[in-house]
Image 1 (spheres, rainbow, N blue to C red):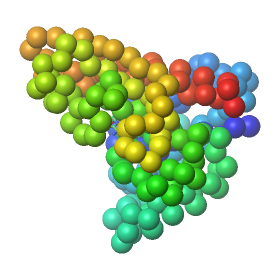
Image 2 (cartoon, rainbow, N blue to C red):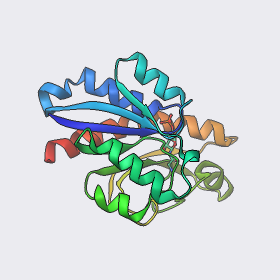
Image 3 (cartoon, helix red, strand yellow):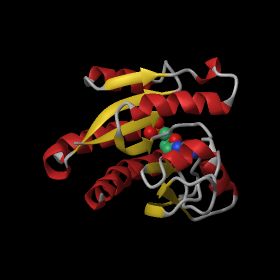
Length: 193
Ligand code: GAR
């Protein structure tokens, strides 16, 4: 069985979409894959409570308890590796990862970013797309490499930016598309493994 480990920091709506897709599309039977655990750097992340209520294994590692970024990533890596994951899925995991961590999971670490990469890497993507006068926005699923938000793109979804949109309206429109493309990209990756 191929194990998927999902990392979250907040609501975890993408994580929920992935867990639901795994159930509805019978990933265990079709892909030989299952969501093995959900880990978070935020013990109070609402998504963690949701995952626990689903009966999934959950773990929280508060990053404030670590003096150096490398120390947190080393602990995170040790916890993740107990599940021997085929795929590590960043789903709103709001941490910059160290190069050693990224290298350890090369080819099996994926992220979703709320912009049409390579445009608007980093934070506040929706605010910046609106301020730039863009007519379209979107989301990108990509393999994670050492450079922030710059790995090979696996899937993208495009949405219009409508007159009067504020960041919250655009975020909601993009997020609904994220929930479609992220499970699809993960299933494709698992099929190729
Ligand atoms: C999503 O929009 C995701 O694309 C974004 O955080 C949100 C998490 O929502 N990720 C990043 O900005 C990564 N740099 P969720 O917790 O409801 O899935």
